[in-house]
Image (cartoon, helix red, strand yellow):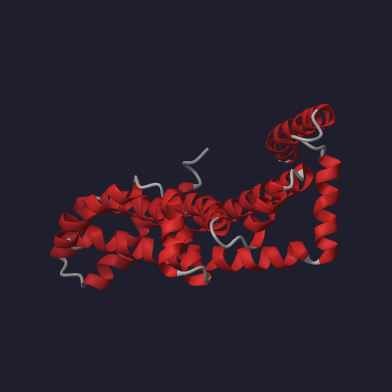
Length: 257
């Protein structure tokens, strides 16, 4: 058992550590050759430390975190709820499901300036941008999962005269939740894009404002440092999302590899 655990840890830990080491080495070499366009890892870390000491980084993370949290939470609640409703209400499905797929194709980042110009530059308008970017992966996966519910189980529930709430609780939710949680994992990453996009346009604030200002000043160390920080946070949140996905569908552990 100990040997198997060691082999598993080796397979899980060694490849990402190796790839990270190679990436940092390449980054260091390229940064020294082109310091204006691509600074070194050490300088990027120094830029983050300086911003943390001055309080700028924490303030920016707080502003971005507020937008991210509101937008993602609304996307999770409304995306899953509406996806389940589409699965159960035929009239709603026939009239609006096509619209969901049509709106998914609209580049939200492209219309972000119009959203902010029309609704203002406050937290509500920016959170709406985050919501629109994050909701569609969650909604589409929920719809797909609901469609995968075995019709035989639904028919048996109807023959047993199960109440609607019991049907949702015992049949629809257990089969849809794994797909919905997979959508949540995608929405977590998409929400980061929405947050930065909302902060870029018209009223730069938060982490997006730092990136925009640093880019305009050619402060490559700050840009790279903040970009890496965003990537690390995204990976951490996605990892948490996958843990929640596993908790929501423990019966799938023996299937997934």
